Length: 226
View 1 (cartoon, one colour):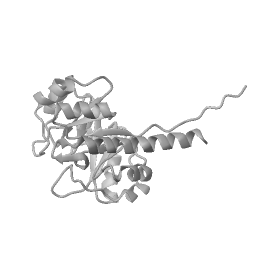
View 2: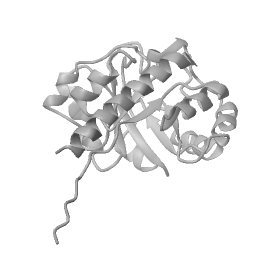
View 3: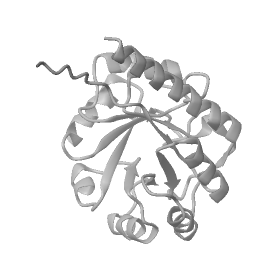
């Protein structure tokens, strides 16, 4: 007797970043997102005090990741916030070295701001060091939350060697196209579903999640028909 096993690609995950409100955080979870991002970078308009982040994170159900976003922060301070808040993942948006990433006692996502192939090539230094690579849009004044997409075609010739989290200007209107073209492990949305920095438009967030789910359902359906 021969068994036929169909191997299916994993679904595209969803992270919502820049959370500051408990109700919106729980609403996002109810919509089906996989991870929530909490920004601790001092210059961000979405910065959240550790005490407030801890309050929200402690109320989350199991299997929802709490991601702390940092920019060139002292490594000991990051570790202290990880433990205090109960973060499960750290996302680094600055000039943090591979050794810096290795020193953290949790999963690490390294963010890269993409404007050219050279920016993608820098990710090779972190191969085998971090758990995933978050690709955002290059902006001279901002380290994230730009509301702009980068040229996804760059990934046709150079991709990080690990799970790819696509960020930068994603919205309910373009996320399906982004997934189809890039095929990321996850998508990360922030300003594309906001009414103000940190305050989410739950209607747009619902539309965003629905678009990702439609893609996932179509993709799984097509795999089953192979």
